[in-house]
Amino acid sequence: MSERRAFFGALALSGAQVVKLGLQFAVLPVLARILGPPAYGLVALAMPFILLANMVSDTGLGNALVRAREPSRELESTVFWLSVGVCALLTLVIWALAWPAARMLGEPGLPPILMALSLLLVVSGSLSVANARIMRERRFSVFAAGEICASAVSAIAAIAAAMAGFGAWSLVVQQLFLWLIKAAWVTSAARSGFANSSSARSTM
Image 1 (cartoon, helix red, strand yellow):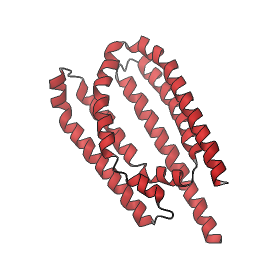
Image 2 (tube, helix red, strand yellow):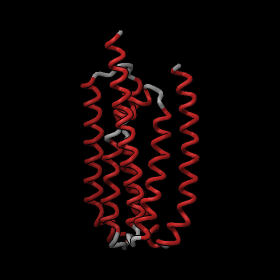
Image 3 (tube, rainbow, N blue to C red):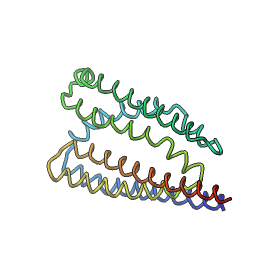
Image 4 (cartoon, rainbow, N blue to C red):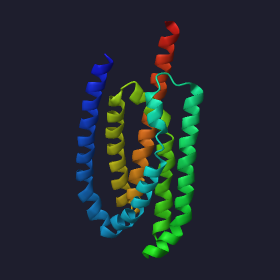
């Protein structure tokens, strides 16, 4: 049953990625027409800092937690707080570098955009335990559903923000909605799955 769930979950996750890319391609011309190149250029300057910090924050703790058959609550708590702590530290580093980077790149509007996007690192770090629980149970369909819902809502939020005149911040809104919705979905699913498995073990 577990292998079957993993197979169909992997198919669902692949399908979700296709839907996500389709939504992005559908929204791109709409946002590009409203915002124009300057908004995209500003966010494009900020994203390499976020992606690099995200790579550095991946310490492998989540993957180690996936391989543990029945990790204790103490181990999960340790992994959670270490992941959040590392991501929070990287967020502070980005905040410290925001203004020097803006001067170096000649873009005074970069710091607030960069600082807002860096908050995504903490959201990502807070999902280390939840992601590990779902992956260990091979419930990949949870990730698929979260991707589709988050992509759809974040696209709508970005278009609404762009039409309201938020400019480059519309793209920031899109990323914040995307990650916050995914975080809420995955965390809720991980907690319910953990509660169900705990009750099943207690009845054995």
